[in-house]
Length: 309
Image (cartoon, rainbow, N blue to C red; front, side):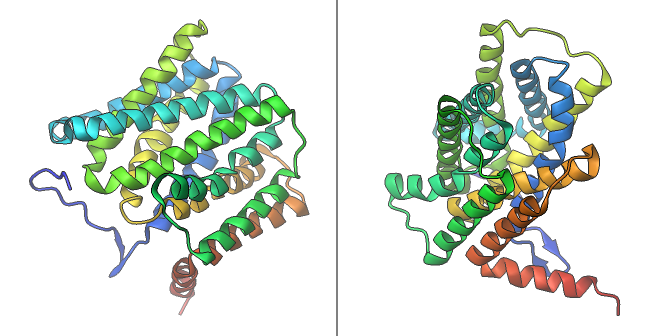
C-alpha cells in the first residue's frame, strides 16, 4: 500500500471494539440523506450543475491541505484511476440529473437504488467476484424495499433509462473503488477524485451557461455542508471503508440513502411517509442485516450498551 511515513490509518474503535466499515458507510448515507432538504432548497435558487461544480470544488479545497504532502506518493499509478473514478462520479450525477428532468422523483429514487443489483453483476462481469448467497438475498430484499419506499414508480421510459445509466456508472465507481482503495493513500486518492469530479461538472456547467456566483445563505449553507461533509468527508469515508469491505456490501449500505432522505424529509421538511414507505424503509434495513449478519450482532451489542443499568 502506498502510505507515507508516519501514516496511522488505524481502524476506528468504540471502546475496545473496531467500528465495522458498514457502520461508517451507513453514517455516510445518513449525511447524504439529511442534505436532501438543503440541496432541494438551494437548487431552486441556483443552477444545478453550477451547484455541483462548486460543491466538488469546496470538497477539493477541504482535503487539499492534508493531501498536499501525500499526492506525490500517489503517482501516476494512483492518480489516473482516482481521476477516472472522479469522472465517473461526475458522469453519474449528470445522467441522474438529465433523467430526473424527464421522469418522476420517486422513479429516480428507485432506479438509482438499482445499483444495489448492478454492483455485484458488474463485479462478476469485470473481475469474476462472486457475491455470497446471503449477499444476493440481501440485495433482493433491499431492492424490494426500494420499490415499496418509492411506491413502485411509473416514470417515463427515456428518463428512467438515463437514471439507470447513471446507476450503472455509480455501480462501476463502487466496483473500481474496491480494487484501488486498498492500494493507495485514502486522502490523496479522494482529493484527486474530488478534483476530477469538479472538472467534469464544471465543464458541464460552462457548456450549459450555468456560470453564476452563489448568493445567499440558503445556497452557501448547502454548498458548505455538501462540499465539506457530503463530499470531502463522505467520499473519504467510502475510500476508507472499501479498504475493508466488498463492493456489494457497499452498495447495500448505500440503499439506506433514500431511507434517511425520507426520514429527514418527514422530520425536517414536513413530508408525509405512509405505511408503505415506512415498510420499505424497514425492508431495506432487513436486507442489509440479512447480507451482513455481523452488522446485526453489532447493532444488538450497541442497543444493549445503551440500555440503562
